[in-house]
Image (tube, helix red, strand yellow):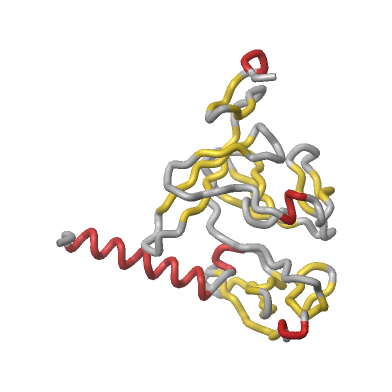
Length: 204
């Protein structure tokens, strides 16, 4: 039997997860058009209290290969397959610029106080941490394939596109959803064999 306080906390977490699933703009946190899923175009706005709200605008006929598009052409476009990325929470762990683990077009500017300012490339390309600019082709591996693998809480992995970055998988929701916390090695170090190491200790 769980104590009342623990039950109350789990209920609050469950409400937060449900709210995020019903209101994707809580994760997106950028004003403008956004695909809520493969078949629904929406719009993210802030209400009078500063909270993000999701407005559903248009449905697509996926049975005829028309899927939602929120880049270039907003609405339903013919596509060989749905290209709407999976979304999830992002929490700043340290200051700096970090790639979004779900959508290659997005990146996050984290202040030293761990305040997140989400950004999105406006030219349709993906964001490259190596060049610090929006230059990644949308058909690149970083945009087409998941760049992290979370199967258990505490799992650690390197960010293949840039060895300075790594992630730690956490499970902080009542819905048992795992998601990655993005981190970066200190200047001059790279992530290798589950640790940040200096260049002279790297395996060649």
